Length: 113
Image (tube, rainbow, N blue to C red; front, top):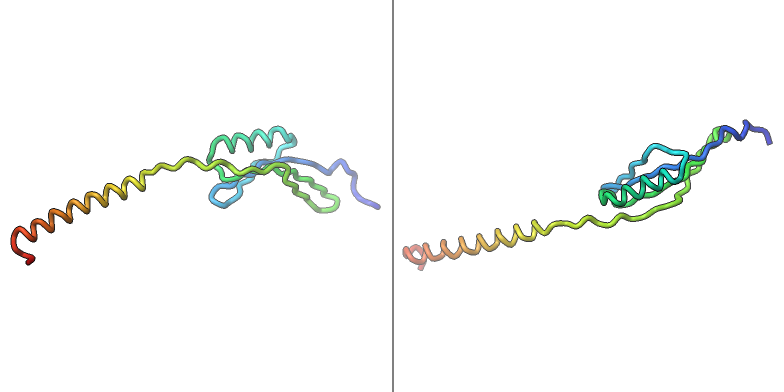
């Protein structure tokens, strides 16, 4: 089997983060610990849906790159506020009060029998 020397082969690690269904990869690093730290920091920030650490094996002599996932974890969901629910409740109460006064006005003036 002939080929170029094995020295040109390389192994690198990169952290990838998913936000809004789109994966974004960090710069490859030669250290697994560094990529794992990036992934754990991304999880701790709670800004990402998923994170993964991938091992990239590059062999230029065969013109190929093999990617293997070595760590993957879903992030915890960020607590959402109930402002939307409270806003809808407030608007419905105000509209109910307004409807009451409009009905009273129309019945009091004899506009509706």
